[in-house]
Image 1 (cartoon, rainbow, N blue to C red):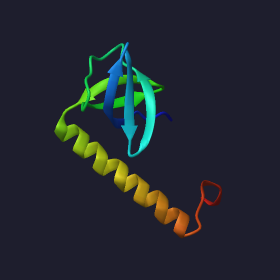
Image 2 (cartoon, one colour):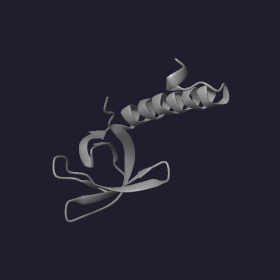
Image 3 (spheres, rainbow, N blue to C red):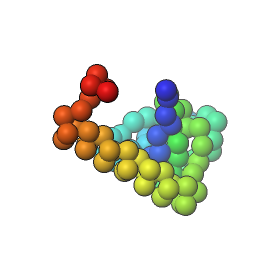
Image 4 (cartoon, one colour):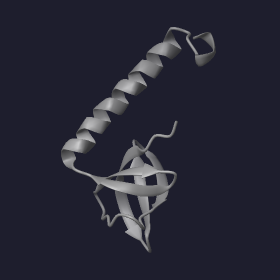
Length: 84
C-alpha cells in the first residue's frame, strides 16, 4: 500500500520544492500543483500531488500522529507484523 505524506513547502526553485516532514527534508517535483513557500502539500513518490487547506493539513497531522502513537505502542508491547 502506498501513502501520500503531508508536509510543508520550505522553498521552490525550477519546479523542485524542498518539503519538510517533521524535520525530514526532501525534494519533490512541483509540476502538477503550483505551490509556494509555506504551503501544506501531499507528496507521493517524490511528486507533490495536492495542496492542502489549513483544515485538511490539521486533520492529516492528527491522523498521522495517531498512527505514530499506535506504532510506538506496538513496539513497546513487543509486537511486530510477524507476530500477528
